[in-house]
Image (cartoon, rainbow, N blue to C red):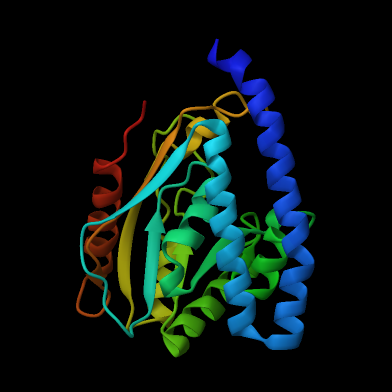
Length: 245
């Protein structure tokens, strides 16, 4: 029954989502090229806010919980499990204060209005997961960027999204590169729950009645922490909070 009900709601949601990203594509372009970074950042904040708000069409909602105080004026590396597109949108909105920049797969860098533009021009990096020679310099660039600007990076060490909420294997190489080139950073584990339920039926229709929750855990300082300990504690914090049903 839920799937049947979701068809008309999903159609309306898709129309609204498409209208928003198409509207904000030229807005981002103007903000970035005429007014600079701050204006572009503000346009992306408004974009992500609207994208989060239209979840009500699917009888869904979102929330964030902070379990620890995050340091001010320090580079941050948010490490999260990955369940779907709304992980990026929710992170952009809920963590907007920290200027999140994403380690994203290269395929998202073209063809998606607004989203591709932001990934290409907002400070994020696009990596080819099949080509380490391309990925490593990009990760280095992002690490150096957040070290210099005291902004934040977002990385999904599973590499690909979970389609049932259960976490995949965490790869450590990307996080290790970011830590190497942002030695003053703090690693912040983030657990995302129920984002996958929006795509439980595939790309269409969307799931309805989903409660997306972002849990931001206490930060771990890179400096003075053995990397193996760092990755173990980070993965543990993320996985312990995942609800897989």
